Image 1: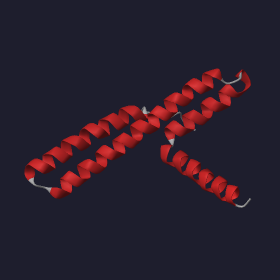
Image 2 (image 1 turned 90 degrees about the vertical axis):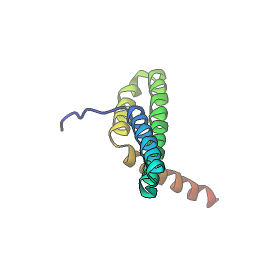
Image 3 (image 1 turned 90 degrees about the horizontal axis):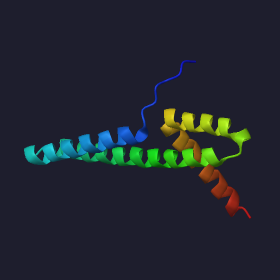
Image 4 (image 1 turned 180 degrees about the vertical axis):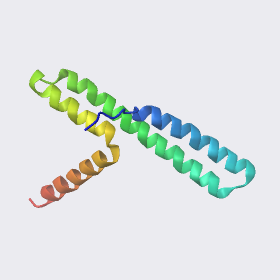
Length: 106
């Protein structure tokens, strides 16, 4: 498997926020409602990517403080999360639902 170049989600997020704001503004100026809505969606997608990137960056600090035996595995997990943000979010959401259901059974 080749090593993929990973673009920081915060950079992608800021790019999407800027593009989305510009598209929404252009849609307002031209009266194109569809372009305006698509611009807002792109802006919100950018905000979500930026927030995801902030979480990943925060976890980087935790990896540095983890016991040496676990740092390599934790870094591999973070690299996976950077490469596959949607899959990672889905896994976390699934675990949250599962743990929530287990907590209600008691």
